[in-house]
Structure formats: C-alpha cells, structure tokens
Image (cartoon, rainbow, N blue to C red; front, top):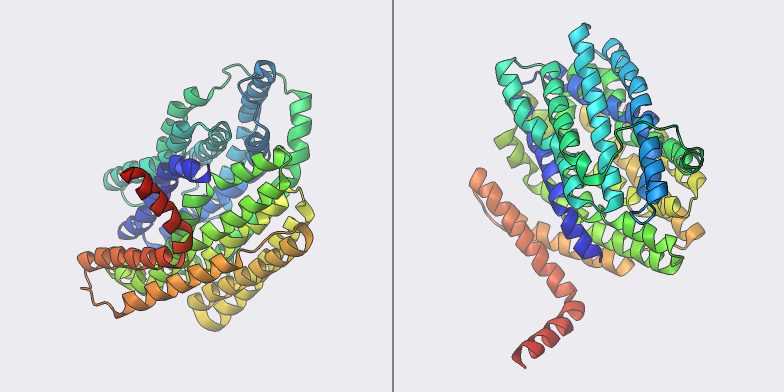
Length: 479
C-alpha cells in the first residue's frame, strides 16, 4: 500500500521541489544578494504567518477530515471551513504589512504591501487545501496545489523579471498569481462551500483540541527550520544572508526532495493504522518509514557532496559561487539530519499524542541551532554557521530517537541502516574513482553512475528478500 500511494504522490513530490531547486539556481542570475535574501526571508516569514492562522485547522483536517459517507458532518465542516478561510485571511494581510515594515523586503508603498499580502494569502490557501486534498486522497488536486506555486511561479517569475525588472517584489507578485490560479483550478475537485456558515462548535472544539497543541509544535518546527536564517541576517547583514541563502536552500532542498518523495504517503498510512487500533502495525510502519527514508537520504547527501561543486560551477551565478560551493554539502547534511527525526521519531510522538515530548525535541533543536550557528558564524563565517546548524540537528536527532525508543517502543531499523550506509559508501568510493568530464554532460553521467552504483549495491545487500520473489515470478511465467 505504501509503495502504491508513494507512486501516486510522486509527481507532486518531485515536480514542486524540482522547480524550487531550479528556481534557486535561476534567480541568482537576476537578483542581487540583498534582493535574494529579502525574497527568502519573506517566504520564511509567510510560513510563520500561515502556522498561526491556518495550520491548526489544517492539521485537524488531515487527521479527521469527514468522509463522503457522512454528508451532514461534511456540510458542516465545509461551511465552517469557508468562514475560517475568510476570517483568517485578515491576520495574514496584517502580517504581510508588518513584514514590509520590519524586513527590508519591499518598497514601503501600497503596491509593495499589496503584493506581499497577495503572496501570503495565496500561498496559505495553496498549503491548506493541498493538505485537505491529501486527507481525501485526491491525488490530482493535491498535485495541482503542490506544483502551482513552485512550477507556475518559476514560469511566471521569469516573465515578470524580464518584463518588470529584477526585484523581490516582481517575483513575489508572480508567485502570488500562480498560486491563485492553482487554488481556483483545484478547489472544485475536492469540494468546498461558497456560503460561509456559522462556525460549528463541535468541529471547532475538536480542531482546537488536536490542532492547538500541534500549532505550538509547528511553530517550534518552523523555528528549527528557519531560525538560522535570521541569526545570519541579524549578525552579518542582508547581503551575507543572500549569499548564504543559495547554497543553504539548494542543499536543504535536495534533502527535502529526497525525504518527501517517500514520506508523503507514509504519515497518513501510519495514522490510519493507529486510528484502527492497530498500534503494533503502526509502529512497524514507522520502522519501515525510517529505513526507506535512510535509503534515499544517505545517497542524496553523498551525491551532493561529490558533485555539488560541479553543479555550482555550471548553474550558479559567479557572485554566489564561492559561498555556495563551500556550504552546499554541509547544508544537505544539516537538512538530512533534521528530516530524519521529523519524518520518523517525531511522527511517533504526534501519532501517540505525546505533544510535550515532541515539543521538547523542537525546543532542543531551536536552542541548539541558534547557539551553535551563532558560535559557528562568529568563529568560522558562513561555513561555521552551517556547520553549527548541522551539529545541532544531529544532536537533536539522537535525542528524539532516544525518547521514542525508551518511551514509545520505537524500533530502530539497525540492519537496514547498516546496509544503506554500506551501499552509500560503495557508491561514493566508486564514483570518486570514476573519471568524468567537468561539464554538463559529465554531471549527468556522474548522477547516472552514482545511481547505478547505489542501486546495484542495494540489490546485492537485499538479495535475500527479492531473489526468492524473482525466482517464483520467473517460475510462474515459465509455467
């Protein structure tokens, strides 16, 4: 079931991050470091505004969205949802205008505030409705909502930067337009109410009971993902942050793409098993999730370390190149270490409603990232800051794993981790010894060869599992 659902979610989980990856490279050729930093900070601050306004209800919908069989409850849910979407747009607009005043992200004009507000609102709607589509298993709608901003924003953004000129405001407006179109196209596919209704007390009570604690966790998780950016911007200035943002964003995006390719369907599946009272099956699913996550993250980080320098030389503008090459591999490692606990042990806490334990993990990561990144920045510059963040996420992952194992019985897939590590080391060694040209063709060759080396090693290590199945299949085919 996990494999089938993973394949269904694959287009969304690949196209959106791939577009974000490409755009992170392309915008370096248009935007100056200060403008690049402004665009990234506005995007990060929008995520915080979404968390406070809509994420609590989104979390409730993902877990408890009424099915098609309960028409009465579904109508009440949709009416309440429409009312909340309208009301909760207001704090997002206020947050957008505050961002324009606090972050040096846009001209302090009516147009600047309007464009940032449009970006905030449309991105929040995309995010919310994509989660609801995932809860309903509406794969096409989910895909549209997930790719509208990244893919559409990339296309419209290029046109806007060419026609209007290079600025963070032009880019924000382009993304807002693409996100609005995505929401309008996808909404009829998942159902919605055109009429606001009085907020249903039972739904609100349940949503606040579940989504309220999750809101606190989400804010803490946002801090773990973004606070290093604000540390660098505060201590070193917007230009330094702009230089950091490219390598930091690309490295973490690589880790994020790898993790979400296999994890998009994993949490709903484990959640469904637990809702059915099958706790042992849910724990087994989480163990499987951890093994699969490691199988994609380990070689991804190794690949970024091995070919990241060549990618940077080919695709990143000269102004950003030196810094990007210096921090790219470390950024991928920092992201991978964070996503390991977010998608495995932290999910164990959420499923079991152990919110305080999960909160302690996020608080630990927030404190460690701020402290170690600041120390690293002061002693080793931008490379030191990224190294500090990586160490912080590594220590947090160990802490989260210890809590999950000792308190909830989480099972670490030790044998699978050993096999994945061995296959990754083989791939890295073999690729390092293989000569390939230092151009675009060579980059493609290196990626393909790395994949062949890794898959081949994994096939040998897991032969006891797949070989008997293959023999049975071949026997049936011959019969």
